[in-house]
Length: 227
Image 1 (cartoon, rainbow, N blue to C red):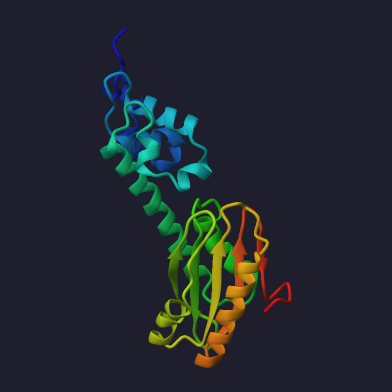
Image 2 (cartoon, rainbow, N blue to C red):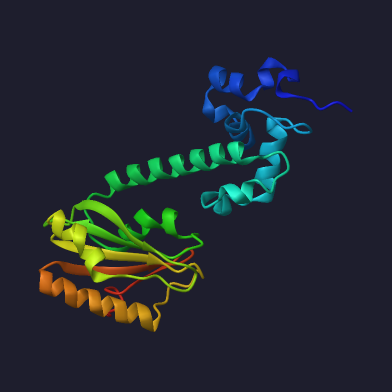
């Protein structure tokens, strides 16, 4: 049986035309993804490919999907996979920037968790960030300090405070994730935190908190009385 292409569909059912005519809210997730994919393969049209991707990967997995993982889908080559990854990451970054504007002043640890959870909650690697704040606790920037493997992240105090000094930050909040999903601090986390707090005291840059993000929960050193 011959494959049915997007062009074989009625005009009312074609995702791109439907988007233009009715707006993005009228489209399903697979129709939106089909527009990104654009063209099908020898045996599947773009909607078929989109449906298979959504059936294969959870939404949590798609947040951190790599090109190599998508190419495991028959019909998805590197070019299509790259477009999908780029689109997903652009959407994620736009959401993050909008949220950053909404949370301008940091007053409690839960705000930091809300700000960083989408980026870190399901990450397969450990990321270490420093959130720089001015004298009124307004966010100056979020600096990625290091990326480690599943078991270790190298954190150098010079790298942590370099941008803080350059941008005249008054204080910083340390944030990293545990790929295991359990946010409880390790002995190494405790050691690194104490070391960075002491370095901040010398530089007159206060370490307000260190937050570890797990899956659907977080640990605050300040809230738990360990800072």
